[in-house]
Length: 255
Image (cartoon, rainbow, N blue to C red; front, side):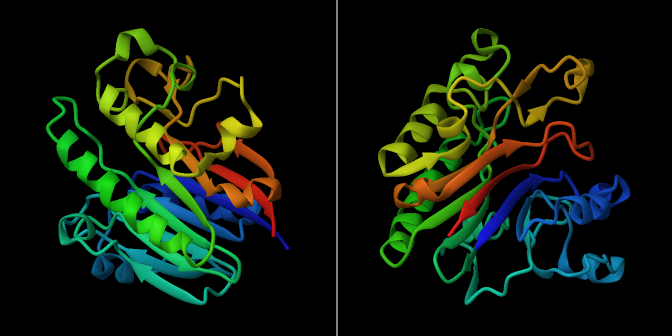
């Protein structure tokens, strides 16, 4: 079976729906779609009555209203579903969801932002360590496919102005070393694997017409267990899709 798997930081599900999210679903028809930064509680969502026809919905909101949170829409019934990684200080922010399918785990993740003053850099590094242990435990059973907003540009090719952003949130040495570590532990950046020299971004600031000028960052990723690499047919960024400050990213995998 060929799966069209996608990920999108929607920066608020209400705003995304107002900006054409349902039409996006109908056009792209992903089998599984991970969403980050949904910014809605379960109580509020139930009042909204979103209509995502053809999809089962799994929601993991943050306890804090209007902040963080993840969701997965899927056409394929998972074997199991689990929210969180077993640590309340991360799980209360609704950052990780895991769906088990026949041949892989689908892990949807919204990584912490280190913040402008790097006030959450330590928190993010602790999250990264906890998350990596969690993923490696999953891999003992079957391969993993991780999608989401990692809030880091790994290499200079992954952002428009690397020199100006050295040491800034999302491009600190610490965050980039963690991106290295994920790869050193057997995970593969699918976009960079299939597009080694391609300059394309997945996030742009709302300020200074950054998107119009393509002054962006690639901070949204699909990482997969190395064993899945031969099955990856395509890795892409839909940077023409509007509706958030992020673009949807995805892979096609035949498995």
